[in-house]
Length: 144
Image 1 (cartoon, rainbow, N blue to C red):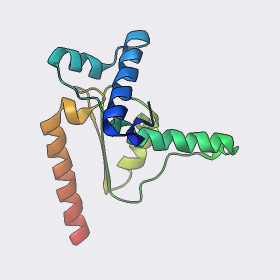
Image 2: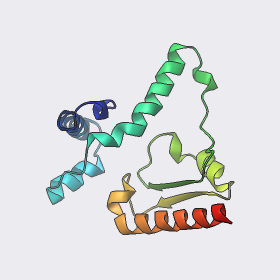
Image 3: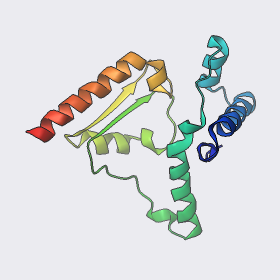
Image 4: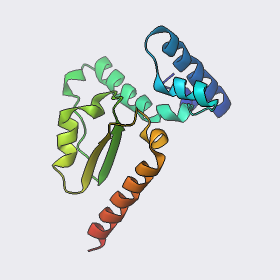
């Protein structure tokens, strides 16, 4: 599932969708599956796994080389805007990550409690407005 984006799009999307729907039936209710069923639209695609692939690859290589305990959350070296929903997954939804971003003047951490995991889908207009504002604010600070 995680490496599906490396495959041709029609194969990767097919494998990703089937895996997610299998997980939806067996383990937990995945909000994106419910949205797809209710709206008869396809929002799931293999490209959604791009960042997860590199995260898991880093963890896997560190485990194989005995350096797992050395892994730390990265500290952004560039202005970063992180927006998440209430459906939190992974290491990016911790208090430490939020503090890391909020301690920097050029970074933003936002959580939409009225959104799930894919905020750019659930709150498209709001997400785009916040990203535009962040880019505008960041650009004005860089050009001064």
